Length: 287
Image 1 (cartoon, rainbow, N blue to C red):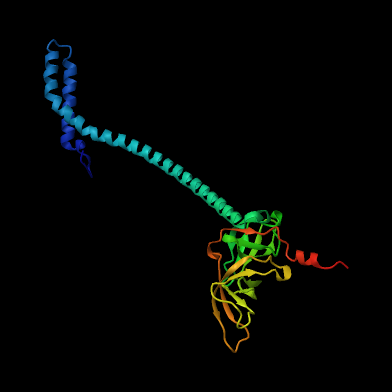
Image 2 (tube, rainbow, N blue to C red):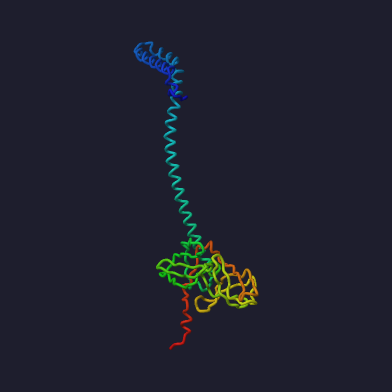
């Protein structure tokens, strides 16, 4: 069927003339039907008007097909939209399940890293990072209701020290990472037992107050020291990456590479079994 500005082709003058002729023949046949020769006349007339009838049927068929296909198209469009919504919901549910599985696997890996002391730790998720430049603070989804307290160390993968709890709410806790500029922990070089102070630089760690000539070389591990009872001793802090000494300086300049991946921290362990300074208080003589 050809469509133009004037409408379908069977509505043109020629089409209307053909349709009128067919209708006229039909009326005549209806009027002659009582006559004895009506049957023969009808048969001959049918043979004559059959081409016109078929032509009209062919012309009308595209219209019916368009109407039928339009209804099917609307139905298919609705079904397609419903299927897309269902697929979207399934993908969202799958993503949620994957995240839950990843969280469980990461927490299990952290617990496995601390070994038999796992009961002293509480797994926590990182829910927020401080966006301020130079500040390295995290917000955890655990708080005092979970046994978290100020001063408790926080470990990342491989049982390495990530930071220390500095603020606690009922359901949230804030952690200062060891690379924060306000972070300072007592450290010790594992191989030579040389003490020092591990200070955050904003993006790394330096070991201060190490005398010139101390037995410290690149590759040595730096651990926490139990000095003052503020942290348990033996927690892994980082690895010495560079040592520089100047004769005019009193102390060596030592750079320590952190072993924790602070940019990808999603789950940590809070050492809820540790109370800062507890064993120092117990060691004091009774009055």
